[in-house]
Length: 420
Image (cartoon, rainbow, N blue to C red; front, side, top):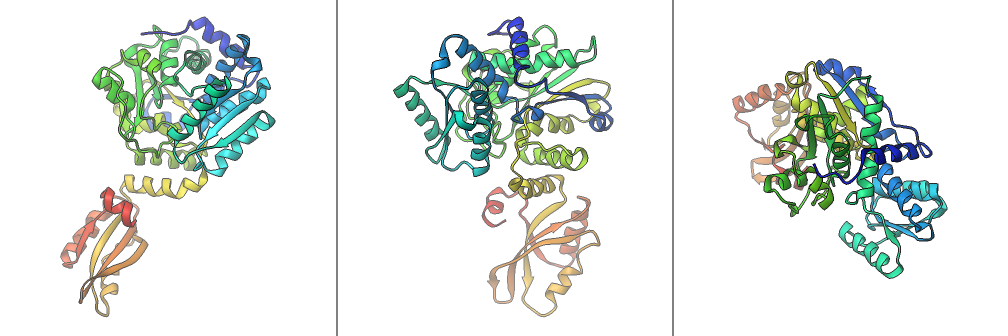
């Protein structure tokens, strides 16, 4: 383990943070504990002042930069998400000027929230359609003005700040309790590098589990290769963890772990957890914030029973305009919603005959005439929701018995993106 900080420095950083916000709760979740036969503790970083752990690294960076004489400088960051909000909050706390560069395509809700946290101490500049263009503009601004860049994850002071999550966990667990499993979400790697560094020698190395979205496996691929791998593309759905390249410093701290300790989660599986936590617990989580809890379902009771598990819930900045998409993805992953293209005869009564094939728990959620594929037949896009996945076995059997041509396109990514 390459450690970039002393544990006493992390403890000092955690103490200093109490001037800004109290320790986030470590909660024993009764529902999840009962579900998996384990003691499941959730470290609720979604309950920080900016609803994510990012405030920690930003605070520690500013604290040290100001102590080193940086109070007469302007601070700069490039972000359209949690890093920007943590940065803005800390600018206002220390009453130092900050400039936040965001892509022009950033949702207005995120711009407004960042401005709310920073108030008069920040300026927001919109530049470029993509983050890389925005980040380059921020770098150019720093070069031209001598401002101080605050990176999102790849810096010793940022990592040290994120490590305060681990310091709080060990203070909050019952005396003498050491986790049997520590589940950490991974994006750029600052949080996981900080936590594993602080807990080195306390939690066994094999008892860490890192969780990445399947569409952005930067740590997994880098551990497999034994060196940092830059992904050619990422799926941005889990926007808080969709990173194409893990931080250099962070990888140096994590490279001793096995690639087998990295779980890749399908984006739609994360949506199941988001909807479940909202419906059952009333907890709003962003996709990245739900990853560590989603890992529990992948492990199952057989691997978790009897264990003390700590899952870090990294954030809860969720835009509810995304909720219909999250619900859709969750239902498709759970197998209770499917899309078919049907070849329906163009004759009186054909639609009634089709409806008679549906079961009492089947519901049509979408019906769209696509085109006539022949004079006597037409192609229909139909979405069907049901209660139990096995209902679709019966429905398909009914289709076959009726001689109805159909294609299940639910998991056909190209077709689904084009016409659903």
